[in-house]
Amino acid sequence: MRAALLRAYGGTVGLGEQPQPEPESDETLVRVSAAPIVPLDLLCASGTSYFGRQPLPYVPGVQGVGVVLSSPDLPAGRRVWFPTSAGMAPVDGSLAEWCAVRTADLIPITADVADAAAAAVGTSGIAAWMSLHWRARLRAGERVVVLGASGVVGQVAIAVARHLDAGRVVAVCRSDAAAQRAIEAGADDGVVLRPAEDRGALAGRLTAAAGGPVDVVIDPVFGEPAAAAALALGPGGRLVNLGGTANDRAEFSSATLRANSIDILGYTNNAISAEQRADALTSVLTLAARGQVAVEHQVIPLAECAQAWDSAGRSGPRVVVEISRMT
Image (cartoon, rainbow, N blue to C red; front, side, top):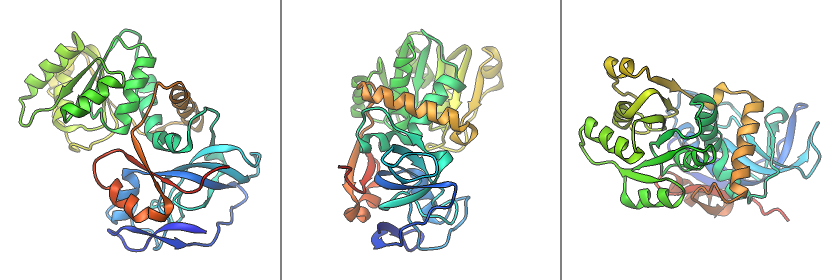
């Protein structure tokens, strides 16, 4: 079968041939249609991941979309989303024509969403939904600030906050263009980060944009933006952190935490059940089918996997590799 192969850590991938996988008794063989290249793929392939180095060559791709070819539980032809442990364990991933996946990890797709669009949402959509719905317990009418709003988690979080009847949604971005796109996607206002801005000044701009003290902050970035957003939280406010793209550390004043009894909460997709994961992805893809969620992405064919890999390493839309067309 054709596959994108990583042959050297720190390098790019190249098109190659791999034997068709032979699924174990608890696995399903999936014909892959689309697979995103996400930051976890790039981290694992760098050789610096905390998961260690897996034997080379291997096929990257920690998630994908496809149809069932053979399974102990699911009918052939069933459209599914699936995760893999590629780069984290000695297994091949989704950037190939076929993939063997634990049957228990498969999530059937019933929403009328294109394969590439569903693949672009993936685990980021799960994280956005669960952060707002489960971790922050967002209530109707509450004010929400989304840090890193131009990223995939941020894009989905804006739509989910709107769906959950947030009173006001503020998108925090690094450029005017990104802020305008966030507003067009459903945010009420956009706040653009300024270099070397005082923490209190940014907190004041967030409060003003939200129309009052903030109730919930969705934070995939951490660092100074998170520290400023915490200052904007009102009584009982919640900051949910699910990443550290800006910095792995942030400074919070004890007085800030105590004055309004705010909560600083962590979130990871690894902490939820299979049922929660399926419910979250299904909910987000249902919104996508209604036109309420749209993740910016570019589709590149498997034959051009090296170009796709290089593009995924730069800022811009999520890269989705088209493996095969379903007919």
